[in-house]
Image (cartoon, rainbow, N blue to C red):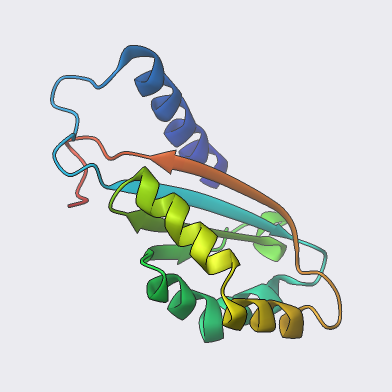
Length: 139
């Protein structure tokens, strides 16, 4: 199901790039959303969840990122190594600045190093930027 939702987002995003905005598509605020999927090394999902719970979400907010939601798949094997989340930004430029600032944050560098003292956590990151359609419940 998660793959279907992600694929639907990706197809819709790609189609909007080819055809331009559809009539009634949201163009009012320019707000964008980023869907991120992290695949962890075996056995490292709990460490990633702890890092997000205790540090990362607050650091995101510090740098202007809005935490929308966090999920783990229900079914194995993805339930054992996958974290999916959505962030929101005022626009694409703000997203770039927020990510640059986050990656250069001294506190983040300390948190990352401490959480990876016994090995790397994240094996793969997928990211898709999206805009909501006019019929979306997102504001």
